[in-house]
Length: 135
View 1 (cartoon, rainbow, N blue to C red):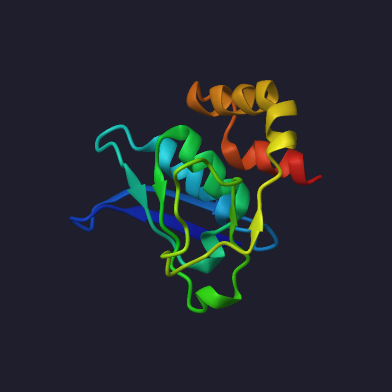
View 2 (view 1 turned 90 degrees about the vertical axis):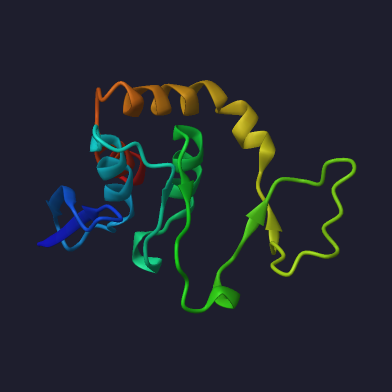
């Protein structure tokens, strides 16, 4: 078993959960953020074990900035949507290696919104939904 705890800048514990050590802890990040009724977080940081591309996207759609700390950023595969007019990426110090498949996002947009609404309305936890998607 593994435990995941959430503390604020005052070092107050406001949420904790226990899950199987066989599961990635990244899904628990969203669960904790959705349980904070006292202080509304706008940014969350984890180590690399709390990171997944799905958590990154869902965090953004839920209104949280997600800031994982990577020991070796150069070893991460970074994605971005295709270039928009007027955006100059030549001066960026960190450059994505590949493009997100925007056609899949467009095709699945209704399902994506349903998942986000389910999490926001607390009809199911993000970790339960992620577990179902991974099965």
